[in-house]
Amino acid sequence: MHKLPVKAVATALAITGIGAAVQAAPSFHSTLRNAAKAIQDEQKKIDVPYEWSSPNAIQAGLIQRGVSLVGGGSYATYKGRKFELKQEQLKAGLSDQVELFYGRQFVLAKGRQSTSRFYDDTDYYGGRVVLKKPTTLNPTAWAIQYEAFRPGTGQINLGSSSETLAGPKTSVYSLNYGDKAKDQFQLSYTAVDSPAGFVAHAVSAGAAHDFDLDSNLLGRLQLAVLGQSFRGPVTTTNLEIKPILTGSISWNAFSWLALEGDATVMPAGMPFVSGDFTGISTFAIYEPGGVVDDLRHNFLAFGSLRLIAHWNF
Image (cartoon, rainbow, N blue to C red; front, side):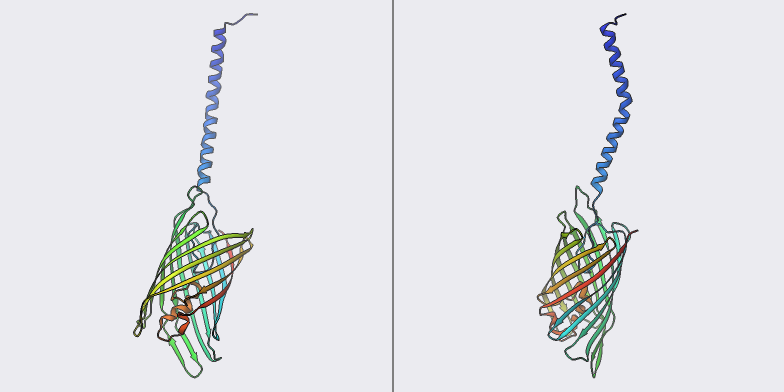
């Protein structure tokens, strides 16, 4: 048997190792590229949060693509008066950053006497745009939102007499922010204008926190504080402070069906713009007296219930 020189063997092994490395390099580099891409994709992914259906809910995160139908109502009693507000709404998530919505609110206020009634129906529409999308590395989100409430002509029946009131136009402009701890924050400006010469402005700051109660049960606490001013032919108010506290629960019965309930407390009375209740609270601009009278200054609480059906596309 011929013995190869040690130097020749070392050289052959080195050449073989280099060849194997050259052949393995593309596969190794491809694995690295795939791993880096997977990490980048994971950094971009984040779950779409649950979207509350109430008009006064603060929301900044990604939007669920699809169509949602909402139906429900709100109820309250006050010193012998009863208030009923029914709503229906259509939402369209055009992408995870753009949403449009349109709805109707139907108001019935019953006075102490059986013949005393106030009727109104309100168009509600607007949209939300997510300016900064959340990621797993930076889960904060920024969004802007516009809401318009356009009540029809309010009808007042007092038994032997009746009266009509032109519906005030209400526009709400909001900047929303969400963080990684399921906290939502909002700054809003509201303008209310009535054809009869009544004008109101409001600036509000709000905060909300969502928390998981169970696998298909979600809760929320939200607080908003409004500072509003008012100018009318008889009365002028420079500043009124109106807090609104809301507690909500959502039960996701199925992936496409949810039931929401909430309780809303207004310790200092109804502000001119009050989310679900704007269809009636905006008429408080007619002072002194007015449709809701001292409701603008005294404690009031509402209970609400809504059913939401959603289809993805």
